[in-house]
Image (cartoon, rainbow, N blue to C red):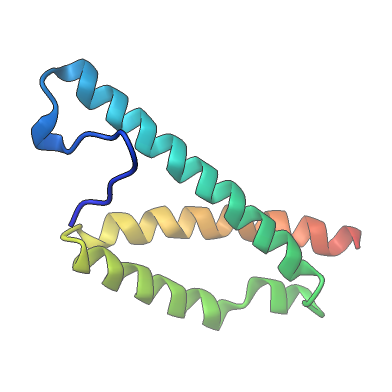
Amino acid sequence: MTATTPNSKQPSECSNMDDIRSEIDHIDRQIISLLGNRLGYVEAAAKFKSSKTSVRALDRVASMLEDRERWATEQGLQSEPIRQLYENLIHYFTEHELQKWTNE
């Protein structure tokens, strides 16, 4: 299933590479915006954590990665690249949260 936004074209509606690149840029901008929103929740979570161990939350990370792999498969994506992507994202957000937690 393909998500759409107002004024966006489906892949089958693109008539040239400019259309395709424009749509990919639009999707990537949305993804980055959502990552910015996610960062806000990560920062808010820092005030509820009591230790570096609770910030790292290794059990939660393992569970999250399993969920993301399953979601990827449900969308017809290979799970391993999505797992690697989320491992990198989680590392980035965890380090950011640790800095936030340490400074509060």
